[in-house]
Image 1: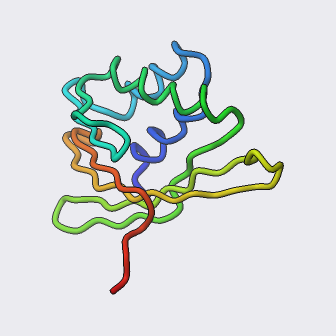
Image 2: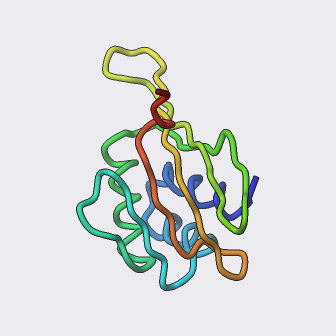
Length: 121
């Protein structure tokens, strides 16, 4: 798996804003572009991205995000991420997302996320 992608998702459970920003900065370019199904516009820049990621830990305390599968083809990396934690009913829950990642000099330059892992027809 790509270390920079794993490092980025490790930041999702860091509640301290400074520590989260440091972790994200280690994984992405300054001109990072991030698209997510939960955002209406492209998130641009490290600080804005760190603030967005901080909403995850604020809204889902104790949950973690972890890359569980990853592969690369022609410079594009596809990663499946498990978001896991204790749900409102007290049981362990996992939701999956899939991310397509472009990199520049070993860092994430653009990432596009999708809820789930796609639909089979």
